[in-house]
Length: 193
Image (cartoon, rainbow, N blue to C red):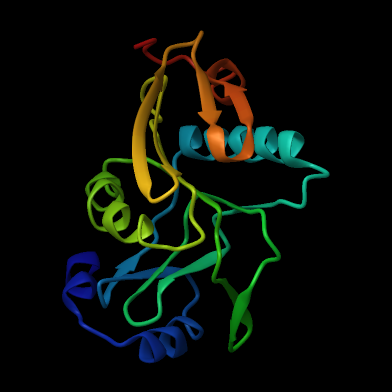
């Protein structure tokens, strides 16, 4: 079914109307519909730790932290996603469609990699996310090893950095924020790469 849906081309308005009637979430990427599958225990664990760490550090700075139920409009014609963790540090702007808000101006986007989504997260989403004018950081978070890869905007340019291992720190330069990987991967037994 996922492959059939992924091949179905649809416009943004048609997708938003259709998804509002579905019992589960779907993403629209390049006008193709992809089902959102259930997350693993590790995925959920990392998502909660990451969102908590971000919220703790950004509290009082005018930022809001959302988890995977916040839909993001990547572009207005063919891509709407549900990143695993979203941060917005300006006044949030939303597109209201049916009963669900869609965030228009994310500051940071985090995707927790899984076998079923990694190629999309590294390719289509990567290319499209980096075109969002408000975005200052895109982060790929491994769940099978201690690794977070980041793409950070400085001026008009994007820079890559990897934080790996229990002693490493995730640096979010645009927000002057640092999070030890040990806090995100706390109590998990993973390869220390």
